[in-house]
Length: 543
Image 1 (cartoon, one colour):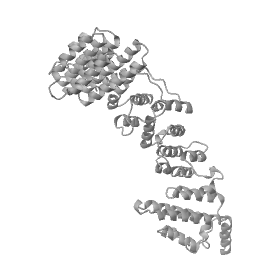
Image 2: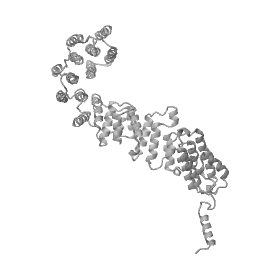
Image 3: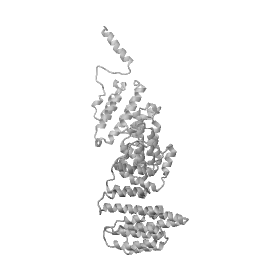
Image 4: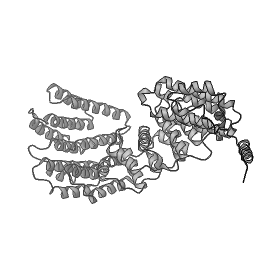
């Protein structure tokens, strides 16, 4: 059994070995928990810093930092005034000066305190981080991961952009939390950029964003808002093709297609979003399939060409875009899914399936099959049935011009809706057919008979007169009779048979015709361009 003297000796020996100093006989001089303001702590430090042995333990620094970080966090935002942030800086400056003059605290423990300052106070006053960072930057390994994260997250961008800071501070091994913080800063902009309205993502910044994105191991850590912002910028910069080589959560793809509040999607964007979904092994929802069908169908009319921005991204990052299946197969796949899910039960979707096959896939057989199936599913004499007939009639006329073959024109004529009057858009399409096959007289005859049907001031007659006049003008332009085309337009304006929208449309056609005449080096080239206009016009007339 130890005597009292022996016990005292053991106690003193323990004190000698430990770096921490404490007293068992009195309370601490700095009771930070009782401080309700930063000034309380600052005043207490001024009075007791030189005499309080507890500061020498180092833990008191943590206590002060943690207490005020917690206190400020709990304050309502309206109560956190600028002075509070300024006082945080003064407190940090005071603590750092004290820490410099406290040799009892080890260098490793000082690093912990400096990191804690950065971690807790950066969000309130970034200047605090600058103070602490100077002392830690001799070796970036001195910085904790959370310190790096806070430095990037709250970097105002006055000295270093967040891209530069990320490269300066990022750990040797990729760290998802830090990478995602940098990703967000580049997407949303540093505060200085926002203030000067320079935070917009350009192609240079997008490349930086994608470089960081690739380092994120667990993509599920990226929140939906950030994903949507990233996708919005890919769409704006015509780089949506990149998504076929990325993992995009199915919910994000669905939101972009169904509820997109950002940049409107172009037809090509629907294609790449559909492919991204397939690559991820997930089928689009029924609603998304319906919204995707027509935009992707329309892509079959023109070659898909990489944008200049996309070329730059591929070059800079070495990204390889996966080869797509032929568009005709993709469109057919979407149509089959729509049928399998029973989503073709509305007049709109019935019409779209016929349009998709007939106008864009040049698959007349499939279009007729859809029509035959659907004409029995809508009541006779209804608008829905008239629309079905009108569309398939237009498709047959369209097919004749596409294939330079007249054999389906009789079917087109029979299917023209007749109630309450013959459909003007279909009559106008027949005019284009006859004009294309060198029978302008027949086209004029159809026009003269039809125009009288729509002279009364009934609703819709302005449109009906407009399409008939537009068709006649196009037939004249195909014959290179531009003077007659101008006269027809002028007479329509003078007689008030043309409304303003069609006057504008005809003016644009005249200009387009002028460009074609100027650029065409042969009659074949001229007819090729006029054929493109004829077919586009028929598609536009589809109800």
